[in-house]
Image (cartoon, rainbow, N blue to C red; front, side):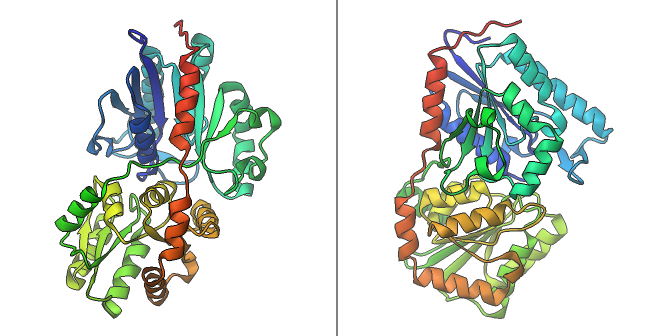
Length: 403
């Protein structure tokens, strides 16, 4: 129960695989936290404990799940029946909500949670905490329009968006991509939608970025390229091609390379990459806790262009080359095209990706950065300011009475 006027925010991040959801949730939580606000995060991420949680933010770990197919999930670590693991997750989520009694419940990406595990909590809040607000937070692009429409009709998502959510926050700019049109959002749901703008990342100062460069032994007159594929589960091709480029012909001797494979890259793939990287003088990391600082220290970031990575890179004003995957979702490709249109990044289509093409793009970006820097300097992140205004409005009206 809230104490002395404290405002409780409960956040749900299903985190079946990768780093995207927990990184976005942490970015939002750390910037929304202020005096009088408690934030509790429900997460299935197996690496949640590696992040530094600011005061007044904590997390509840629910058993991790991993996707086998679009409809089938299995426990990540514990060896029990998948249905039992999902029951444990559902019970923890519901019990946490009943005990914490949130004034605001923010659900990330999945409207009903993994396999509808958040549905009982949403219904309980509607019934027992009628003055609490329920928010669905969606990244700007989910997938191609046809796939999202089909999936949401099949799962009855449109009706539940109408019945169970107070508001829907779109973490993007409508003029970049308009999910209202693309996903055929009905009028009753459209009225609840707020385009917050993209979510900024906390920007390190020049001193912090300089310290990272010194730690990596990058001289002031040298360039630093950082290659990252997020969690790394499907990032081998990007890392493999980058190293093949260096093996065929090294870059200029004044260019240093750092590869961050991500903790979910299969061990054997990772070991092969680390061995090859040593031979060409590239530094490697499994996981880098200060990723924002590393990106700020870089002169160029090569990535797959997930929502969080692009938000981090653009926040730092760093040159970005994206190699977006096209399966199992086309989300990264759609976003890469949208950001390219705005002059913020360059990208290579997955099927055109090769060592020679990669070298050509890298040479061009490093030699001609001015137009990108100009676009990056003009881009404005409004996501956190928009959310703070909504929370302030909620706090002025809040009155939670539990069942």
